[in-house]
Image (cartoon, rainbow, N blue to C red; front, side):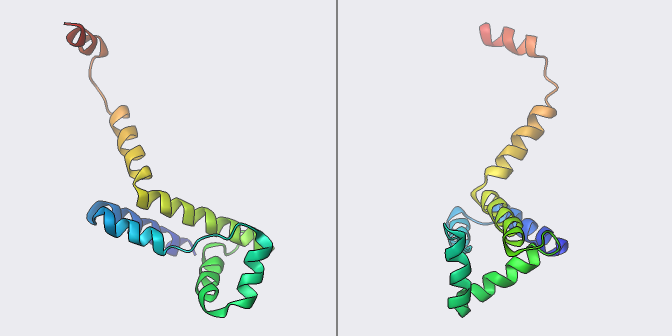
Length: 118
């Protein structure tokens, strides 16, 4: 559901802000990886019950109500997982900081240019 998704995003941001990079990389390594082919992914879910059941539960939680078939439900799951991975790598945080600083920059660019040239 949406509350679980928001909690996952908040936990990812908290990890980036409060933990060291080694821990962040271990969390990223522990995230489930998408198999390259769709047919292999569905065959893997039928064949291997232990590892894919936990991933399958996440599929239905994050993709609930967003599609009619399994491919539509898995798409949002993997999209959200990719977003969480980007957050854990620090990409989103850096982009948000740069965006904030550029929008809240009240310096006179002419004065800065004159200082730079002097």
